[in-house]
Image (cartoon, rainbow, N blue to C red):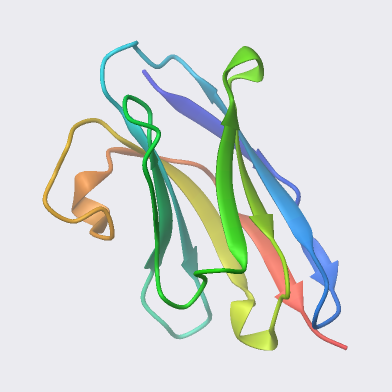
Length: 125
């Protein structure tokens, strides 16, 4: 059973940076992907990035392309989300999630089977 523990959220001013961490446990060495989603108040959950474990390929939503970076430290079983040039529109609860197989669209929630508890990111002056 894959489990996640997220951390790193908080309050940051516009233009600032944060790094979220997602400690992963229980995964197998078969293919998997780790995605980050976010959900702002009153909005649907949005897929923002995904990392493929086997190929190392990364995917980004247009809304965060060039500002956010997903990476992993295999020795620490941790996936990171580096967020730069933050905007008020980035305010949301951020979740990491496990994608057990190659699917058709990494942005679809249904392609993920395990979710973290979420961490709040607030961008405000």
